[in-house]
Length: 469
Image 1 (cartoon, rainbow, N blue to C red):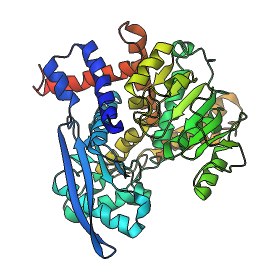
Image 2: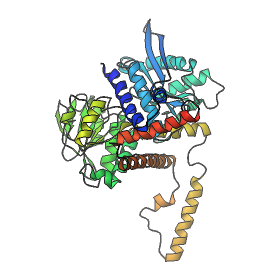
Image 3: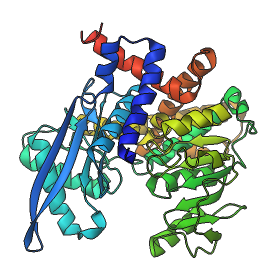
Image 4: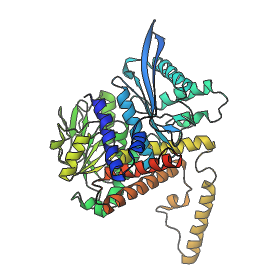
């Protein structure tokens, strides 16, 4: 079985575990589990004096509710089974986070490093044409976002091509999320998935009964962390945990090996070194070796690369007490079973990785309302805060302390509102998962709790539509 077939089977098995506990009727369970529609497209682009044919996919796992939401990745290993697995995972992720999206995913089988930027733009625009022509790109039907191998520039190429084809659609900017700020993006989107990982870990450590199951101290400060993959997600998670929570990032695993520092790696310096050299080898702020630090002893392990990083071949070497799935599907179904038997606590991907789609939801809403967050209320909030400060000064006879005054007296900016909204969604979702886990004897872990919440919501939607019994 290939890795992609295994990934799809893993997601299906995790769904089946939840469906069995929920006692869903067999037909309804199957309807929720399978992808509704998948587009396979092969299109030609004339480049470098010849015609090249590219293969791509866009899968809709569920479009109840609509639109379907999910990233597009550009990768040479992309394939249909991986796309369908990721689309299913996105459905469950959106349902768990109570977002009004169905699940979708897309991919183009291409190595972006082999093409110049102007060539990538032509290829991307042709892919966008195919998606739009088959109704797999629309603010009301299917909304992509960046993923592996794509970024905000890719998204604006797609949005611009959609706008050309649908010039009468006033909401055209909302056909993708993860756009540049100048083109309808939202502050905080680039950091969103990594920020969500931070909020997920904070939520865990704010739940003493869950922390007690790991044997870790109750405080997040001082915890040792190993991060696999210092891409966008791993970088921001490591940066925020080290700079804002006092964690020590003791090792980073990358494609060319691992770098370690027991006192804590300087993430900004390491990121700069990687941008310059392409890897962690040679970084002066830590010790390098060509092996993997996944098996290093640590408090928290954050796999933030690709799926199936932890499998039945290496799972017995894992020593972390808490694993946080910042990537999609980094632990196989078989490895998850082994870790659970060992008592290792896992914060699952459909929750820990949900920061990106949550902030994408905020961006989509911003585009549909055509008004920036905070525009209407910021100055009014500032006036109210200043009036309250004057009243406090009048009542106490003391001047309002300058330390922290700016934060209290200033109205919320868009980035403040985005982070506040993301924090709220992450906290509330974790609270639901934890309560279910701790009050139901037949729910063995947080992953099963997350799937049960998600699947129950999807089942209720199908039943309300008359599709389920």
